[in-house]
Length: 338
Image (tube, rainbow, N blue to C red; front, side, top):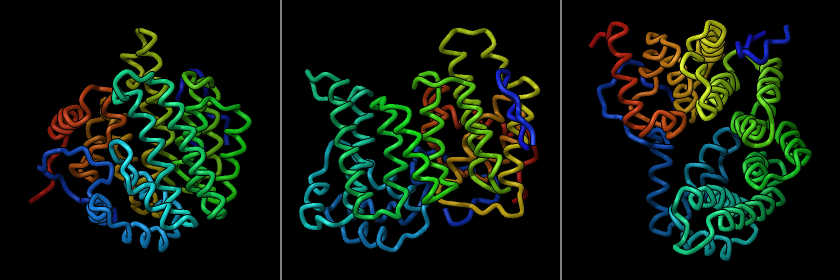
């Protein structure tokens, strides 16, 4: 049983391979974490050639990989014309609706990030794009009823549109029936249970503990511990709570981060996945803030130069924050032998 170490909640009982040594490469913001397939297919998509992306999704059976590629291959500024032409050419293609639906989730977020059309109401545009996402993701799920990926992203759209909590729970349970250890769906559900989204810290940490009660050693679900602590810390900061500065250095939080990291990455059953660098990034961030620079340095070694926007953006520019933390951790332990 994993103790969460959160002051308001105590445990209730009970890319193909990773870099192996420290790299001097400059950090780069890359949601694909250097995945060559993703970058190659994105180049094809940018030129309007959609054969590669359709073939990729037709061949993918691993749920985690489908979620990874759905997110990475749908990140485009604006609304590319080929999103619609793909569906017009293949109206029964679940992958086409999936990519257009996930794109709409990202596109909606852009509206609130200051990229809405001049003179438009950002909130209205955000909600309209999220409804567009819901429509396309529902179509994708109807065409591929055994794929949990559309349902996972419909958790994000449901949270954004503040749909009834019962709908969120129903969608999450549907994902669990199709893919019980779906890390991305769990992360979306965790976000939906934060106080900002209408939940509470107790709900959030209880959800994490429930997920870990049935998680196997080596499971990426242990990353939820780091994610939950980041959310709690952010709420303290936003509230101006003086406890925010020392939150990660408290013994219960520090110990829970270390235990969750070991349960995931040190387990004999651990296997690197497409988004493992993303998960390691959360533990590098948390370990750095706990002051365990050795543990953070170990994560940086495995991550390589690839930066995910979150959680590093919580410390300012994500690439600069990642670089500063990695440099500080470099002096905490001997460098790998050349």
